[in-house]
Image (cartoon, rainbow, N blue to C red; front, side, top):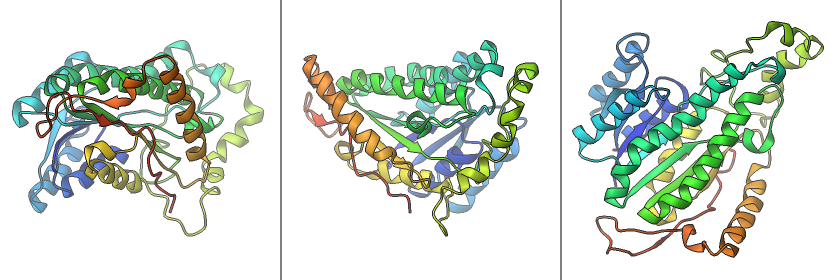
Length: 319
């Protein structure tokens, strides 16, 4: 069944690839990005041209996850034009590379504002509509870094940890209004995104220089990551877009809570399963087991009919 999907950070990388994949699958896609009339105008026109050429429904909307007003306006545009908003794909994000001590509090605040608070802004704009319809899906593009915790990405890892926690607790609460959650966890990619080329760096050069003995490790970080990929594997982020498309095509009560797209063979799936069991047992022991079930009426379901919120699912193999 096709749906109306809003994707944040769709100018490049995973967001852009996801917009293309979902549109090709028949969804109405609102590809959001900053500065649609300026810096990102060529990227916006490229998506619109694709839609015209292929007969797809891709629309571009201005959205800056750091601005309440921008987020509110974007969500209002989607609902005003399409009449509904079925799915939000939380993809917008930024990367910092460097030594943790060298990042100022202001540096880290900015990254958290993009990678974590940006999610909260979009959810606060979209959830009133979804709650009123007793239907919707929040799909988060998370990261395996929140499990494996690689070096030299400290603020980024912290922001992804925080975003993941926010997504999990939000999932418990919105499940009682018929709203589902999936967290797609990409592993590292060294091609196909602008994460590394556009990565931010620490503002305190003096502190960064104090870590000069480690500079060689930072310099070979990409090569070290690529060495984790099995020989002959095409480790391209299009696999994440394909997985998002697969998940949204599943019946609403069968979608996994987490799914992993990782070519580095980091063992994240095993950690996720242990975490899932511990969390579900703890929440159940608290007496809040009903929060593990999605409730509410979708248009085709009777009021109050529960569906199971799948906190685990078939993990996507790294292939």
